[in-house]
Length: 436
Image (cartoon, rainbow, N blue to C red; front, side, top):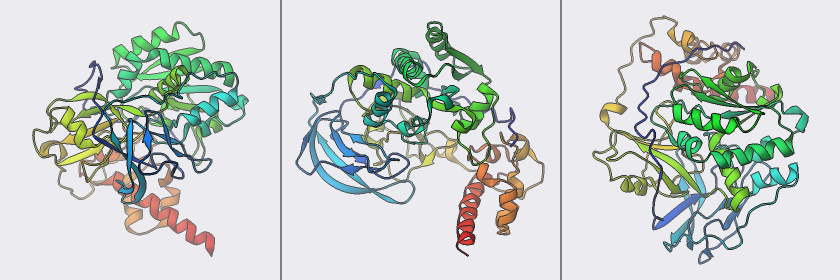
C-alpha cells in the first residue's frame, strides 16, 4: 500500500478558533441513544419514573465490543423509546426530563489506578469510545499485550473545516490529557508518545509542547496543514513513517491512536469519577446566527443547540454531524448530540449547493490527490460494470471515504459516494461467494 503526502488544501473556515467553549444550561429533555458506538447497543438498566443524576449509569454494555451509557442530566426517566438514526435504522433510546439542577451522582468519586487492568477498566466504566468519530469502545483497543504497543499516536490534527472542539481541548484541558498519558506510560509501559497537530494551530501546538516539556516520552510533531491529516492511517504514517497494511489494524504495526478529547475524558474520569456525559461541540455554518463551541449534555437536540447559538438566520439547506468533508447529513434537527459528535453544522443554500456533474475527463486528479494512491475513476467504472474482481484488485476496501477525490474532481463526479457503495457491494459479493 502506497502512502503519500497527497491530500487537499480545504478552506479553513475556523470561525470559532480561539473561542472559549460556553456551557449551555440543561435542556428540558435529553434523548440518549443506546447505540453511540461500534458494536452492540447498550442495555437499559432504568425504567420509566426512575430518578437519575448526572453520571448515573442508565445502560450497561451488552458485549465485549460495547460501552456503558450514563445520564447527562439530573431528572426523571420519562420514556424508553426508539429513534431513527442518520443511517436509516432505529435504535433504543432513553428520554430523560431534566430538573434543571444538573446534580452529580453522589456515588461518583476519583479513581485509584494501580495496574493496567484497573486503567483499562476505567476506560470501559466511563463509557469512553473513540471521540474522533469512529466510536470504537476505547478499552478494547488497549486489551493487547503491553509489549505490542511501540507508539501511542495522539490525534490533534483536526483537519476538517469549521471544527475547533479538539483545539479547545488541547488549549484548555492539557492537565487532563497529561494525566491520561502519565497513567498509560506507568501502567501500559508506553515509552513513545507522538502528538500530531497541524501547523495552523499555533495555540494548540504551544499548549501540547508545554505538556511535552514536562515528559521526556512525549513529543509534538507539527504536521503540514493538509486534509485528511487526521485520518488514522495517514496520521500514523506522517508521525511514525509506518504503513498499516490493508486489512490490518494500527496495533499490527505497533501503534495505538488516541484522540486528544478521548484522553481528556479519561483524565477527568480518573480525577473526578465523572464519566462521559457531555461533549464540546462546534456549532457553525452560515445558517447559524452566532457560531460557538458549546459544552452540551449528550442527548441534547440540535434544535436546542441552535437555539443556544441565537437560532438560525435562514432555513438550512443541509445539517451535518461533523465537518463538510466526512460529516453525515441529518434529516431531522431533533437528532441528539452523541458521544462522537464534535460538530454540528447548519449550511445555507450557497454552502450546500452541489455543482453539476459532467462526464469524467480522465485527468487523473483524483488518483494524484488520494492519500492512498487509489484510482477512484477506475473504481467508478468497475462499479458501474459490477466487476467485483476489478474492485477487489483496485483495493476499494482501503478507501476511508475522506472525500478528497470528490472535492478535486473537475467533473464533480460523486466518487466518494461511489466508493462507499462499491465497498458495500463487494462485501456482499464476497459473502455470497463464501456460501457457494
